Image 1 (cartoon, rainbow, N blue to C red):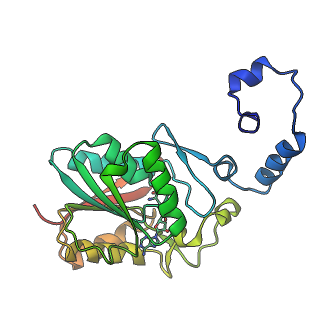
Image 2: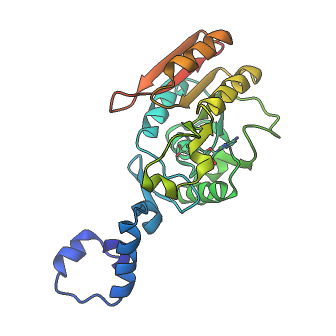
Length: 245
Ligand SMILES: C[S@@+](CC[C@H](N)C(=O)[O-])C[C@H]1O[C@@H](n2cnc3c(N)ncnc32)[C@H](O)[C@@H]1O
């Protein structure tokens, strides 16, 4: 209702006897929600890290647990000056934009295979006035990018292709959710890339059941220093690996 009339909740409370000018439009929104369409796609707005980001269908709705990835990463990079970051799979831009807002001397290259995601991330970077700190590139992983980076950060697709998702998730782009037959294939590619690119750190979000396979994979590849972290529901949710000092 607040979105439909373009007024805040206080206005609604103070005008409870006002007649709706466009009831049909309002009930159309209710109908969409009743069919499980996420409220964020209906209102083109998503709250993340206490800020309102633009979002639209075709781009993944950022989840609150990703705020933890940002906090863990900031803790690691805060002491470094002029840090160079690569984000793989920028989506709506929330990770790169929050890093750019919370760290002064930072330069970020953010990629995505989705044209829609790059468009939305650019709109959000402009909204938060950090366009000068982030370069957006439509590419897979870091293909076509020659630069070196201190850290790679990513919240990649990590659900198994065979997993039967809930109804509301069917509204979100498949290439933002599914990470391969097992689910951790893209994460493993990113670990390989971080080794190849000789970055100092790799920070990733992952599925709650991917700690053991990713830990074994990193050890097998010679990455010995890593710390896994949990989300607020105490599920394993990600890791920060140190690849070199
Ligand atoms: C789970 S979403 C994360 C979006 C955003 N970073 C966030 O945390 O909300 C994963 C993103 O990775 C993108 N993606 C999938 N495969 C990719 C690839 N090979 N290279 C770059 N981006 C990719 C998807 O289009 C999607 O936007």
